[in-house]
Amino acid sequence: ELCGHFRVSAAVIINKSDLNAAMAREIHADCAAKGLPVVAELPHDPQMVHAMVRGLAITEMGDSPMSRTLRVAWEKIVQLLNVESTYQ
Image (cartoon, rainbow, N blue to C red; front, side, top):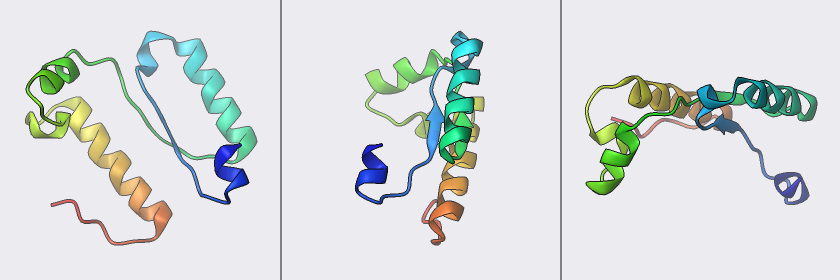
C-alpha cells in the first residue's frame, strides 16, 4: 500500500520461507492478488548469523545456496527495473 501511495514499484523476497510453508503460500497469494512479483524465497540459513557477526554480506561468505538465490533475485530485480546490473 505504501509503495502504491508513492507510485513506487515493488517486488517481494520471502525470508525464511521454509519455516512456515503455509505463510509462504499466503504471501504468494497476497502478492499475486496485488500484482507484486515474488523474486525469491530465502530459506533459513545459519550462515547468515556467521556473516553478520563477521560484518559481511552473505554473498561475501563464498558460494552457498543462499548467496546463489540472492544473486538470482538481484538479476530479477535488475530486469524488473530495466537497468544494467552492476554486480560483478
